[in-house]
Image 1: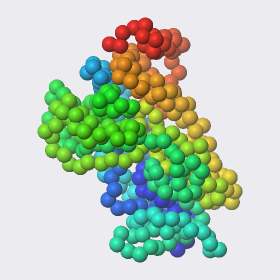
Image 2: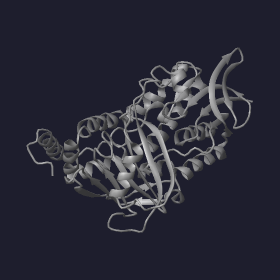
Image 3: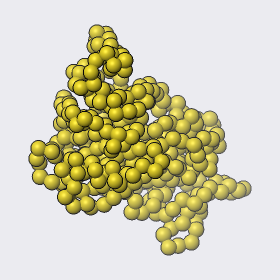
Image 4: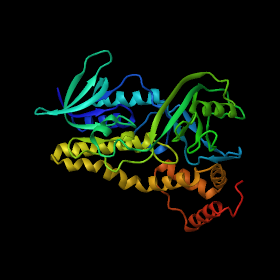
Length: 390
């Protein structure tokens, strides 16, 4: 069978793209490996839940407070007003999205992507089913949604082999009872160079389970040792470990998402994970939606330049948020002194309100001019050490 689009990858981005294309009436195949669970804290904002019609059954925890913890163990609790941050379990959430794509008409194919071939009969995806011989799928277009270090991106899109990333590692544990150190309705974010020299650590509740992990771009850093130290400091060392996972997370969108011919990228493959926060699920799904719209347009018009619409439309809405978060990470994650000051800055009510309103709604918030001026003044005061860190 020949397809209009083959989507390589069945995570949130690929499944979203496959569903959107199937609902648009396109013949779609979704190729995905079986059994892989993406390491992920699992946070999803209300806008994602609303925009993508996520049922309550997929939300395993509702977070009402975010706790920032500094290198000196100073803590700032930020209440999440006017809503909550949802938590999903990627083992079940990703499969829900794949099933929904299949229900819309996408054909699920299980196997490992190997390469792209082209001949007089068209473009072909070569893949290998588990324990079987290589097979081919013929298609007009390809959506590369196969994650960070994407094989599709490396082979087809300029710059696809040079995307910067951090390595994320986490351990899924059996959640303890609520206590002074663990709250099933609170996310802990740990800014401490001993846990991560350039990113952060986390404790994210998932209902009956919890994700405890960290990320770093430093080669040779002991991820498992840092996570063990984090569990010890958080009172979670004795909890049962259910599974351990690690994977790269890109932190900068590629400058190009298509090959000018028959491939467009989405999700981690395109580098759309937010700097500073490392948030990826929402942007992956928006990226999958953008890739689907671009592919559908290309199929309708026959113009390969329409594949560029995926990046153009995504960046038109989210470029400024990514730019601000990049500056934030480069400014405040550089040293423990900066991290200490960043956590202190988070005590500011204006910072709390603007940060979470932007997170919940995925837009930079227009605040009163005086609020912006106050935040700018406090940033400058901390960066020049005019005020103490704690």
